[in-house]
Amino acid sequence: MNRFCYDPFSFPRKYVRAVYNKMFHKRLRLRAGRTACVTIKGTRFNIDEGVFNPLLFMTGKPYAIMLDKVLKEGSRGSVLDMGTGSGVGALIAARYSDKIHAVDIDSKAVACARENVENSGKMSTVQVYQGDLFEPVEGFVYDAILFSPPYLAKIPVSGAGRALYGGNNLETIDRFFFGAKQHLAPCGVIYMLCSSEGQNDMILEFIKKHKYRFTLSAMRDIILERLFLYRINPEY
Image (cartoon, rainbow, N blue to C red; front, top):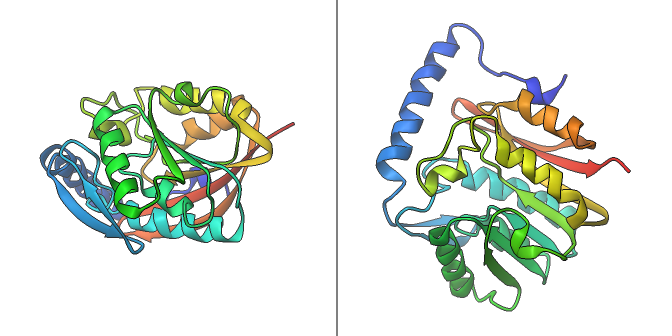
């Protein structure tokens, strides 16, 4: 079975899913801007106003659990957390690596991630940069790149929205795969989060277009959504 095409919802549950999706996007509009303090995988995160709250939308905890598992079993080298947001991926990686770069395009997310890194005592391990995809880390290569992408096809209208919406044609993900190879060390790997609610056929086309291969590393269910963590390698 092609996991990128998997749909766990069948008739009549698709109608329940439609209601769930409507509530999900309403929650993004109404609540993403609120300041909060959350705990994910034993680490406290301050989520500043205007920054995507990974616990509120239920992806942060399962993503952290899956990342913790694969990084514990695998990479110990340098790590790039692309689209770091509040810094969840970077601080999970900091448990197993002493060289982590984290990047986000949104200035509020960068400030939030830096605060969380400082509060965790990992300033010597994690460096946070602001910029568009790989621009701030030009010339660096990594043993692992973490990517929780904006997997919904829509133009974002806010900083928090960039965490979910990757453009009408998921241009952000397309551009990520275009640039990732030159930032991977030999035998380097990408760990990317996907959802049953995302435009997975489009993502699969990007993987083929840019000549990568993928395997499923982990999977978790959250209410009416299924999350997948993929291990992605370039085809050399």
